Length: 206
Image (tube, rainbow, N blue to C red; front, side, top):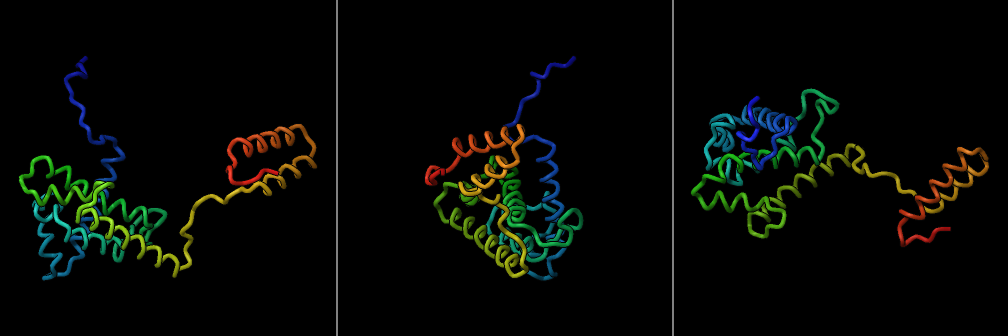
């Protein structure tokens, strides 16, 4: 049996799901390239498939501005539960960032171009340079555009759980007390204990 100590582990993610996600982003990028109008600026940048594009294309802001527009305005999944629908905010931001992260993994370690280094420093969440401000600006524009579209379409954008307040707890406990069974008593105990232990300190338990 071969020893596993002969294989070095990379610091980058190696899961099947990560590889599948990146392959999906590259497939979307292929559609991005195919949608570029002949003679346009973006067509001039996308002269080859993602794998063959040079550092100066994949490591500068301009191509990612076009990428953002494509994801927000043009791209719609061809299969799955969201078939033929605009991307949700989280999915759009994820695809947008993933393309840049793949380029970072490909070029950053071996580049001699200081502009490339500075560009990718903008993806540091604690960054403050001009590239970091640019990244936040593009992400904010993506988020605002998709939320406004969802609001106009009447799509629910808040998927947070419905809050439970002390008066809800009292009503549940009262209903369980009226039911009167041992199971109801046990559930009432659990609900009361949970509210006492996890309820928000700013709310008075009655």
